[in-house]
Image (cartoon, rainbow, N blue to C red; front, side):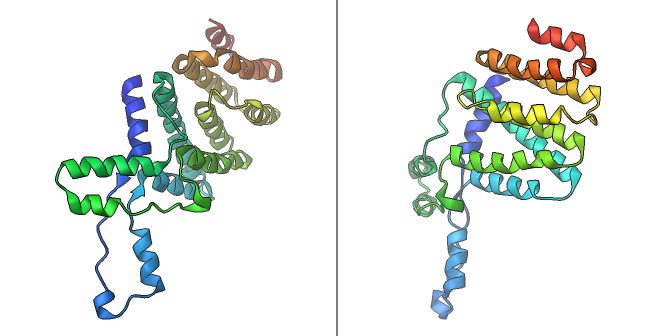
Length: 240
């Protein structure tokens, strides 16, 4: 359901992993720069940050199945993110530290002071100091867009579907339209895949009706560039 997806996305973006404390090596006189780095790495981390790093790593793979699977994950994330937006109770610009502080206070209420103490440590800013969900997503989507250069049309189709779902209603559509227009110039696209992408547009419309005009603009690219490969019933479904 929309509520379950929205709740799942909000949970993913706010969950702070409580990692076990590293064994103390100071008493052995072995505390060094290396151990300091490892100690920093074990500090509480926002779950979304770890997920994004893993996904970015997957999109740098040369394996087509890995690329396809990673794009599928991003598409599912996009569905849940769209659900969160549709309910109107979601802020991607909030600092992840605020969520950590909130979890800390909850832990204190549950008399788990040692865990709360660990969570009070500053969060690692990771790459470039990006400490908001919006920043992490921007970094991920840069990597996702480069995957349209993959030779496999099935990987590219999944990437485009992921981009459609991850499109923010408040962001410019120009880049997405440019990517799709370029892709449709490739005769390698089978009709079934093109229609599958159009059905993705329809699903996104149902999830976020306020994007109707935007999504129909994308559908128009399909109708004008590859009219012979588009199922009339799919276009009619969109227009209805």
